[in-house]
Image (cartoon, rainbow, N blue to C red; front, side, top):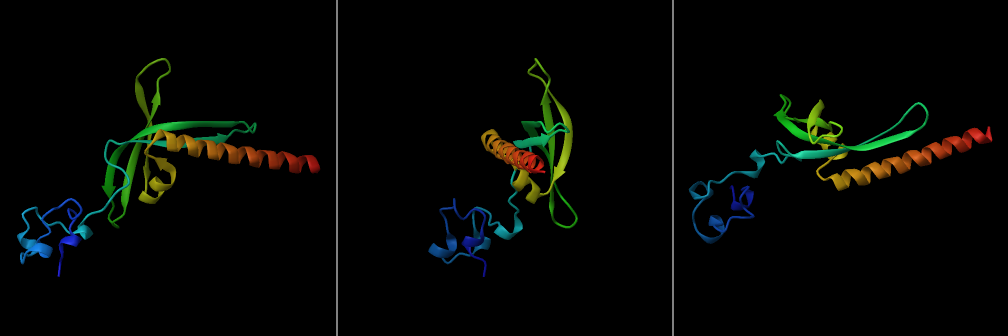
Length: 147
C-alpha cells in the first residue's frame, strides 16, 4: 500500500493522512506524488556552473583557469539517462560582456565529477590539479636527470 512517506512532499507536509486519519493518499488535499516518478538532477536550467581548466603546453608550462558556464538544456534520452548541456562563456577583454565560446553535453555522472556549482569549489579543484601536475613534472625532471 502506498504511504505518505512515499510522497515527494512528505518532508514539508503537515497532513500525513495515513498516520493520523483513516484517509488514503488518493484523498490527499496536497496532490500525492510518488517519489519514484521524479528524478533529482544535479543542476537546474539556467544555473551557473564552474569547471577547473588545467593543461600543460608543449613547453611544459602549466596553464589554468576556472571557466564559467550556464546550464542551457536538460534532456532525457531514449535510454532514460539525462543529458546536461552547458554553454561555456568567455569574457570579452576590457568589457562586462560575455559571449558563448562553445557548448558541451555531459552525463549526470560527468557533471557530478567535473563541474561545480560554486566558484570556490572549482578553484580548489584547479589548485589540486595544478599541484598534481607540478609534482608530475618534478618527478619527470628528476628521472631525466638520473639518466
